[in-house]
Image 1 (cartoon, rainbow, N blue to C red):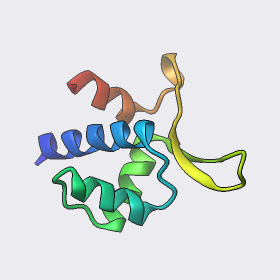
Image 2: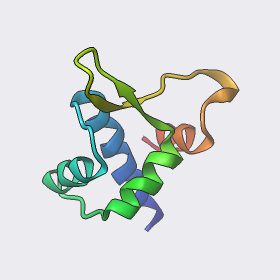
Image 3: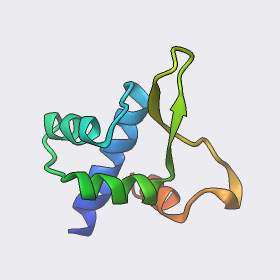
Length: 85
């Protein structure tokens, strides 16, 4: 179960970096397209665990983004996911 969570979160990080995803529902749909079943509640918890934030685009819309942090300020879960990948 733990491995599946790590793999799902790794997929989530890749998706957020590669695409403009603006809602948790969109992210859940993208995960499903990649073969992962995740509810909106699960996506919400993963977003919090991974330190994913919502940023404003120049067009006025929003999208999720992964904070590029270094050192000891990076969230522990994010470091754990990278360590296992």
